[in-house]
Every structure is written in C-alpha cells, then in structure tokens.
Length: 299
Image 1 (cartoon, rainbow, N blue to C red):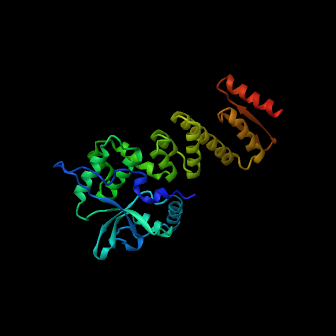
Image 2: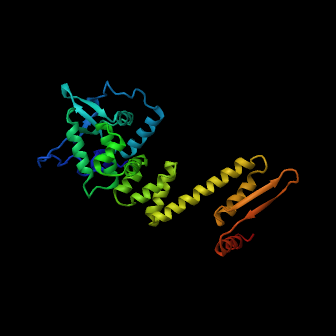
Image 3: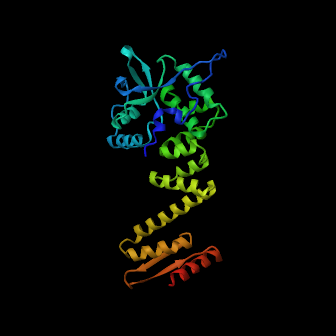
C-alpha cells in the first residue's frame, strides 16, 4: 500500500523546519516555507552544473517515490509568471516527474537570502528536540544551498567533522529505515550499524528484526558481523578452491560454520582425492550446540 502521508512533504520527517526563529534581533523569521507546488509550474535551473543523471538510479528513486512519496523537498525560488525555478534537488524533481507526481513539496525562498538561510539552519540544528534525520536533512541543506564543505559546516554547528559525516550517511538508508528512525522505532546506533550492510533489501530485513525482536545495538552489530564473516569465509573458500571441489563441500563449510563461528578450514588434495576438515572451537558450548544439531538431524 502506498503510504501517502509522505507525499505531504517534509512534515512527515521534520515538523518545524519552516518555523526557524533565527533573527539576531530576536525577531521571528521564516527563510523558507514548505509548499506543495504543481510540477508543471517548476523549471530546472539553466545554470545547473550537473548535466547528466543516471537513468537507472533515477528510475529506482522514482519507484521509491511512487511507494512512499517524496521525503526530502526540493528548493525553488519564485520567478515571473507565477512559476518557480529549482535551486537544489533537480534529481529528486526529475524522479518525481517519472513517478507521475502532480505536485511536489518544496522550500520556497528568495535567491538572495542565503545568509539568513544559513543562520536559520545552523540555529535549527542546535535545537535539543531534533531527531537524527532532521539534523541530517539540515546538514544536507547547508551543503546544497549554502555551498558549505563538511569542514565549514562542522565549524558553524560546533560539531566534529566525523559527526557531520555520520549524520549525512543516514540519508543513504532506504526511506523506510529513515522513517523508523524518525519514529523512534530504531536508534541512531541501530541505523549506523545498518550502514555497514551494502544491500538495501538486507538493511530492511535487519531493520524489521530490530523492531520485531527489540534487538540492542550490540546485538545487531554482532549479527551483522557474523553474517559478514560467514559470507567472507565462503567467498574466500570458493575463490581459493573453486577448481578443487564442488558444491557439496561448500554446504559442509556452511553447515559447520554456523556452529563454530566460521572457524573451519577444508583442504583437499586433487592428486590423492582426499583432504582434511579442521574445526577450531572456542569453548565447550560450541561443541555442545553442534552435538545437539547432529542429534536433531539424527546424523
């Protein structure tokens, strides 16, 4: 089912992004409001330095937008004739058009208010009630709209460069995981652990495990570590001995590795058509769990 709530714009992720009280005189100002704008009224920026967009990546983003809506608004400025021109977010705009959206959420601001916008975003980041995604999106806006490097941004917000990088990396996660983080179903520690997994599908599966089983950050990190170790072990075994033995041997490695944390080795002598399997175990518990598995299977 399409979760249409996301289509309402940044309000699904940031509740007060358009009410930033940052005027140094103490006055309330709104450097950028969030509006729903008809796509046909939006023009791309002719001075956009980026001239090409990967069609496959655009299509993937369009599919996500079709399912979940456009999570991160584009930024536009109003021009003549009641139209708008994109300041940042052209890739998101193109993907939204591919997804056949009629309207998109957008920040609307004047082209000459960069200084005020920068102050607004920096002060907004200093608020205590922001969640990790809100902070990450504010960092992203500083990069896109104020032409700041990560080092400059870190100086302005009083954070370490590594901290800024960690927040920005959260925006690489699938939209479903960002929403889970926004809703407090997982923590930033969980999200950072999921970033170690390359496959988005696997990230989503692990995220569901965290929520359904109430896994701690340490537990999910250990789970990811073991899975990665197992995958590396199998890949290495296949790479080194691909011509020496077939699939049955890999199944043996896979089965034994589950109970001995992949501390196993298989060597085969092609000339003698024989070999050895070496199992290294840390404690009696590993041996006992393996024995129980053997008895269950009646091997």
